[in-house]
Image 1 (cartoon, rainbow, N blue to C red):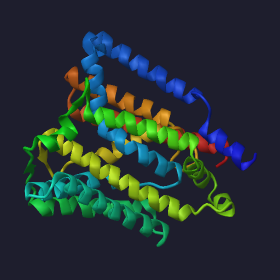
Image 2 (tube, rainbow, N blue to C red):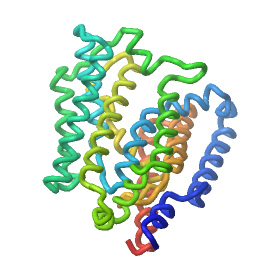
Image 3 (cartoon, rainbow, N blue to C red):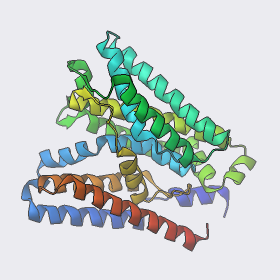
Length: 322
């Protein structure tokens, strides 16, 4: 199969059989919740479902691209907490809001660059590298505040998490916009093609002149920036920047991505599947919450989903001979 045909096969056209299966699961899940709680299909509840997973989805867009290229970053949860604390400290101490956010983006980008360089240049395992970053950033977030939160009272900052555009919360608007942009990039641009080529066959990518190292380092940078911004959204929603912000989000992002059909070994998957996977998590979370199920059962359910999704991914890899 030629390089162009291989990439086209991995990108796919239209909706895949796997995505149809995910849609069926989503509809069945909504149907079961509708029986238990009929108002679940009301507009306000559907929007709340999107809001529940908006930050997960925002981070899942670049994380999916990184995964497609063959990279992994499990430090995103700690990045969220650290950048939320950093930006909030700058802002409450008098720095302009836009400048504070810009500093947060620069710092998170530099931290993503460190991850990328250690993994791609120093050849340190991506899981080990980002586990180390995970621990450092979480500890740094607590050290900066002594474990205390930073109260946010400004309406301008709160708009990130609580503002609305028409009937939609601002984080939901960002979620939908980023998914559309991500889908367009992967589907129609040379960058998207390069991501699939690098993840599918790195040696072949280098032969045709694609700099796989630079590509993945760039994706580590973008993923870190999105994670930091996601942490700031949560801080705005809570009106309080807490060092524990983002705890567990790395697993939620991985679950949405893998459940959506993106292979952890890279080169195969679609952003549409990730969107559906994210919605399944959102419906599950919101449904269990409104029906009064304790949060630790939600954690158990998401952990089980992640294990099943990874097992299915590995099964598909064995069948394909990769």
